[in-house]
Length: 314
Image 1 (cartoon, rainbow, N blue to C red):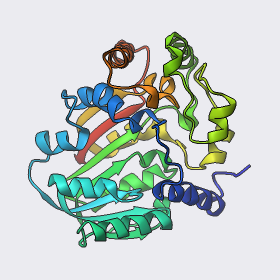
Image 2 (image 1 turned 120 degrees about the vertical axis):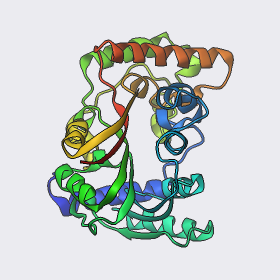
Image 3 (image 1 turned 30 degrees about the vertical axis):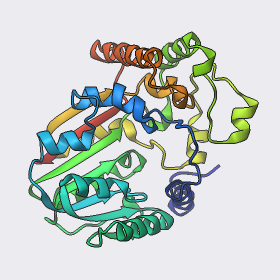
């Protein structure tokens, strides 16, 4: 078992995992993560952030919060660089500095930026836990599902605060659910009950590992892996995810805090979301599941596992 605190070994495993992702090694015909489904995002996420199914979080950010084009941006955990390319196309920011732990991912980001005409972007490979940035240098810092992989959250957030220019923006689209994916018993019970209410055509296992989908062709329940198994796959996975909102509030002024769930949907739709189509029946099921989740979060029975945070320095 890899000790996630042994940084060199853990970093190598994490770098390989995300390098493979950037190069498409785990790509499959069917999406398996709920946020990987354009249909689920349109029906279950966008309405809770922007109020409009067709308007995602970055487009909403440009329309409602950061209306002018900023000059200098930073992206943590840039992967293959899609986030900053999309942000530039939307007119959020002209230049970006992207970093990622995976040298392979950085190579992909550089190549695609060059090919698509974003020659002003610059990239480097580094472990974000050791990050150092020039003070008062960035108008915008974007983090999309990367901060929950950081163990030295205080150091990274303090660095962000110092690196932002006056009136600069920190935008986090993040998983803030239980550390190491230790779902609550209530989450598991409600998600499993919902899974078993679905017709078999929607429960086909689309696991990216082909032999797993063959050995277990149907999904029967929501799963909770042990913390050790989660860490073995990726030592950085949700290592301190539940602490993110508190630590951000201690260092920044929150301008927008958008909860968009995933508390049930992430468990229910894992490995089966690709089975849902835009048919009236499937759309109805997704909307109903999203409404149930939203109600349970609003009533305080569940916490939102995913949030969009827009903040500025204090």
